[in-house]
Image (cartoon, rainbow, N blue to C red):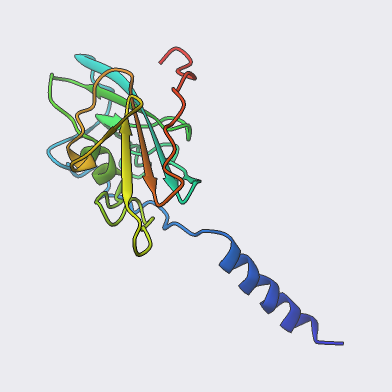
Length: 172
């Protein structure tokens, strides 16, 4: 009978191969401005809108983290942040400003490009497909302007299915 240690090593290797791994969010400098977006002690009150962002790596969800843009060490809140891990993005700014999906990913500390979306990469012959409000769009997803109740779905690799409308706004 093989040694228990070798069985555990084999089990760990199997699990690592079977479960897709995405890097943990790399925190931006605690409280330092990101893309000119400050981390303030309170939420801004001039511009207050919400979006929903969903990322899929070959059909598997890539979670948008809870408390993105809310570094505990700095005890502040970026104008773009999350409260829950449901993909709802909060834009709460002290002034009117055009914010983009690129700003969200920069505050998250994750890449957003045609070849890398939060650590998810398409295989050879595959692509990154972006949907905005149920319509497939081209161009850089970084440039997508954040507007009220905007729905963005990014698929890295197939199945490339048109997303169902997001309905769980829960008062946001």
